[in-house]
Length: 156
Image 1 (cartoon, rainbow, N blue to C red):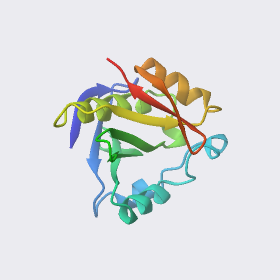
Image 2: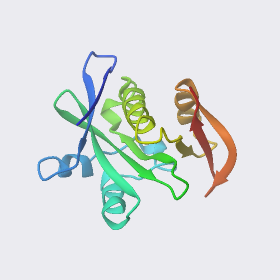
Image 3: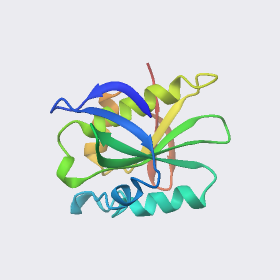
């Protein structure tokens, strides 16, 4: 379990846990709001499948106290940078600070791994909510674009 000590706006502790036999169905069923589906997968199941079929991505369940409320992935690129990807917070759990706490928790954990690697993520330029969240957490554009998404890096 990755516990950064972050709480959502309701005071629930946000933790990241491995996807396992007990929680995979709840993670697979996580679904964003309809208008977000042009930027992210329609269900957590897609990201779970990607992480099982890829040697790069590792899926984590996002918990609020003891309830699965989302999904996030992390991976290591060839250059040693660590990436955050595939974040979905269930539509019913949004606007409560869950996504912010999940990104902070994972970014803090990734940045302290061996060699203190850079932490990166990407988002579509039309996804203004993601841009605002990531900028507020200290992510800044690198000037690179991949698959029409802006690449950002966490800067202390």
